[in-house]
Length: 135
Image (cartoon, rainbow, N blue to C red; front, side, top):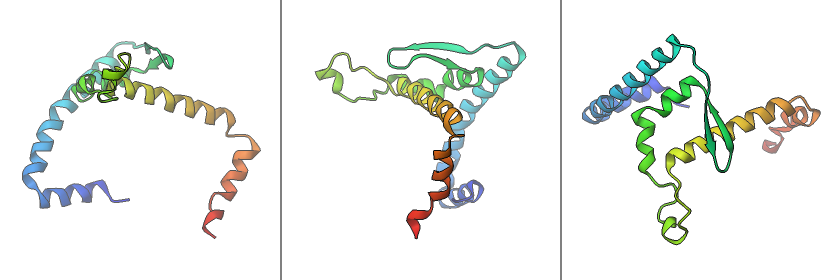
């Protein structure tokens, strides 16, 4: 995998104007996120809960709430995950932001399942056999 610093240098050399435009867009978003994180650290924060029709209750940690409240993610509210499917199926009104929350919960459940089941012998044998397909 390429080094992020070298990639950035290559991008600056190849397209300095685009690099500056990207940085000018990212900087305000990062400032807002960092300010929200500082505020969350200064007061005792509890997980925020969101009720999702598919996943049930999704808990968000304070740093996840900061990311969720940032313009970077809030702009996804207006982007449809399912395109024009809502014209045929009126209940299919799913935004990219809602999709992101579902992915967060799915990842959390996978992590919990791995924590529960990773100690079983089957996973140990899979670890041993993982590269056997290359021989």
